[in-house]
Amino acid sequence: MSSTAPKDSILEFFVNASNKHDFALDITLNVSGAVVSGTMVSAKEYFETLSETFEDGSDIAQEVSSQLAATSESVDSISNGGADFIHLKNTRVYCGDNKPTPSKGKILWRGKLSEIDGFFLGKISDSKSSSTSKKS
Image (cartoon, rainbow, N blue to C red; front, side):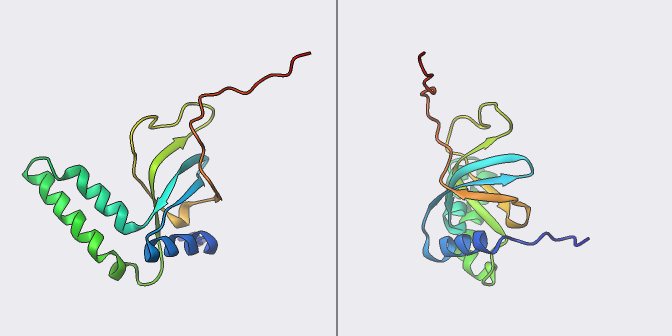
């Protein structure tokens, strides 16, 4: 058995397009029995946004922010034309019928393309309306 699972070439195409053209795409992923739903963003946007979460902290947090900002600038040279990771913002992770984890906040998520079992375009909404039942 191979130690590296193959990547879905269509999903990799979407990730490469997002990384090269900096566009966002709502997507839902199946990952080892969990459902991960959010908006795919470029690696550059992911690292820039992650950097911003640390910039107002301690000296160490500011150094982390600086390193992440530098990574966002060099992400094109790191990728070597292929993508190994997918990046999502406004992410929700669903396991079973429970509420998503996390259920609040603008959550960033990074996952290995080789670990994704399937996907569909669009994301799961947090609709508060319940389904209507048929009256007899």
